[in-house]
Image 1 (spheres, protein in one colour):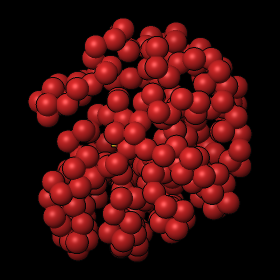
Image 2 (image 1 turned 120 degrees about the horizontal axis):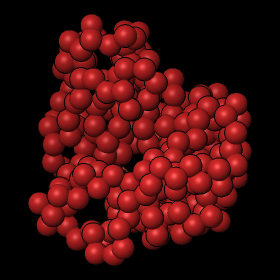
Image 3 (image 1 turned 60 degrees about the horizontal axis):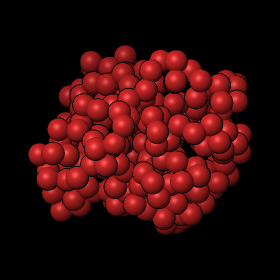
Image 4 (image 1 turned 135 degrees about the vertical axis):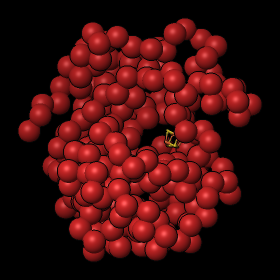
Length: 235
Ligand code: SF4
């Protein structure tokens, strides 16, 4: 049994093609830009078995061009056994399975789960000043990022660009250097900060530092500049 926050039947932004997404419940990372703060509490959400989850997912299959499943959250690696069982069952049924993770877990868990999927989408929160935007040990995250280079699994690296928080040129250059470390990297995605979830923070009674400082949104031009600063070329 595991705990999930929600299931989305159809997404075009959570990996390649069209996919269903399972959002796991529970996350220890506490990012200031989190879109799903309601997924943090590991005891909330819905308890469900892999069997029931797969039954629900199979109903969505006919709407998808190819059966794609993304395991997101929350942090899926906070429930490694449940994640692994779901991955194995889904893959047996022909789903292409992607793991959307912050890398916040032990080495053993990371290798086991990341090594079982078809694609890892790994988020680095800030390569130089992680404590500014997250509440988890960045050293562990970085070690897992480096471990990923030794697994033969395609990788996308993701980074949320927030004006005044994660957009220093030296941070973007450092991100580009991390990207270069992984020979299996297919894509480096710089994602603009999205303020749509700010209301969730308020409703949950959480203080969000991004809401009290300068506007964190970014323009198309800032995004383009950030991509250029990473120096990462599409292979
Ligand atoms: S890792 Fe993801 S779910 Fe967890 S706090 Fe950060 S953005 Fe939110």
